[in-house]
Length: 237
Image 1 (tube, helix red, strand yellow):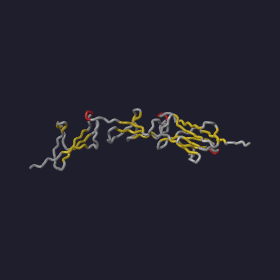
Image 2 (tube, rainbow, N blue to C red):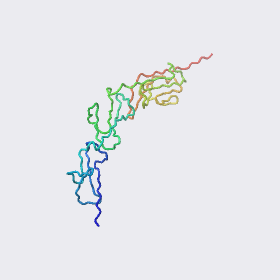
Image 3 (tube, rainbow, N blue to C red):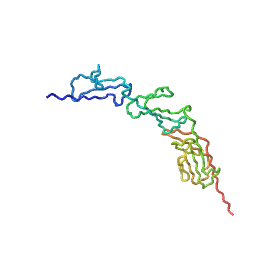
Image 4 (cartoon, rainbow, N blue to C red):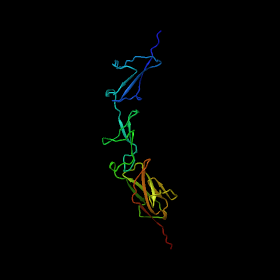
């Protein structure tokens, strides 16, 4: 009884299964459980390929008819679409439906950016020419009367005009250096700073600043909000 013929196994040696036009492709034919020397013939769609022998077949440039190019998707990793001067910006390039290894080239206005590769592009400080104006801070107080009396509750609010996306806020008093702490009579809650029982010591100049991102970009300071606290006077008869 003649021995059974070994099984031929065809494998793709590119490291990935998705092949795109102009890409190099290498196929290899192995025989399981056999170390004999073999002659090889290669076939495509049932037709023998001429002048092809050996255990590997290399296609140096795959044709468009056999493949399709993947779609590149460019995304902004900051989580917001408004970018301000000096802010850090990260762009990412992904291929839909593909996990292949790729080399990357980045372009701006049709010109290739030198020394930029990988699937992410980071601009550490956006230029004024690429973005809009610096975000503006608006500060308000409630009640809006000019004077606040001792014992009253007053709330200061801070907003970024024209944008309310993912900002966190810092509050300062008398100098824009030390962040205001929470106390028994005053507390910060994001964009608001509330004084629950105003005292004369709460009078002064207040600043707020907004920042966003893990490597925070901060807005510029604007003119401070002046808070005047007036004592209550009682007349006895």
